[in-house]
Each structure stands twice: as C-alpha cells, then as structure tokens.
Length: 118
Image (tube, rainbow, N blue to C red; front, side, top):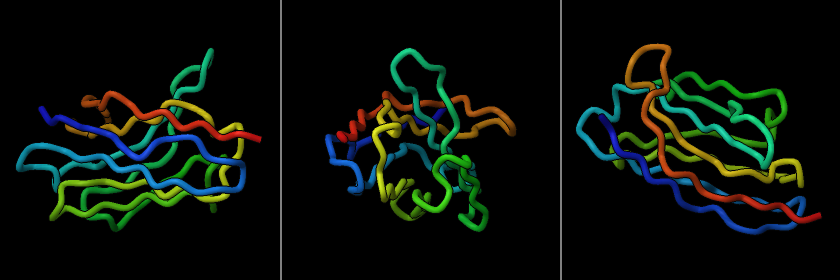
C-alpha cells in the first residue's frame, strides 16, 4: 500500500490559481499511475486528471482541459495539480489516488478542500 497526503487547497476567487500537491510514501511511487479526483457537495466523486508512471502521458476531464495541469516528480514522490482560471464549479474536495493495481485507483488520500468564490 501507499500512503498519500494532499495539501495546497484553500479559498480563491474565480479566475485565480492554486497548486495542489500529493506526497506519497513508499519506494514504488514511480511505478504507479496517479490521478486526481474531486467530490462536490451532494455529487459523486469524479475524475479530474491522471498521469502515467513516467509522466509521459496525461489525461484530463473535459471540464478542466486547458485550465488544469497534472505533473509529477518521482524523485520527490509527489504529484501536482496546477489549477488556473478557477471557476466556482471547481469547488470540491480534491483527492489524489494511486493506481496500485492496473485499472484500479485503490489508494486514496484524505482530500483537500478547494473553494472558489464568485
């Protein structure tokens, strides 16, 4: 198992930016694809972005494409989510997750709150 700790959330005005970080424990971080998900109040958790183990491939939900950027630093066991041009509808708890088993994001962090005011 891998332990994940998110940070960087907060309150920001619409149009602003935040960078989320997710620090992972364990020696095998560089072998996992990593993802960011979010859950808004009253809604189901949804996919935001993912990155391959090498960082060579990235994937985004249509709702964030062009505004968010996922990246990783395997030397620091950390994955990032740079969020620009934030909108009130981006308000949610953001979670990072590790694809420990292919096709299954089975390890999750505790989440970090992002609130975007209009």
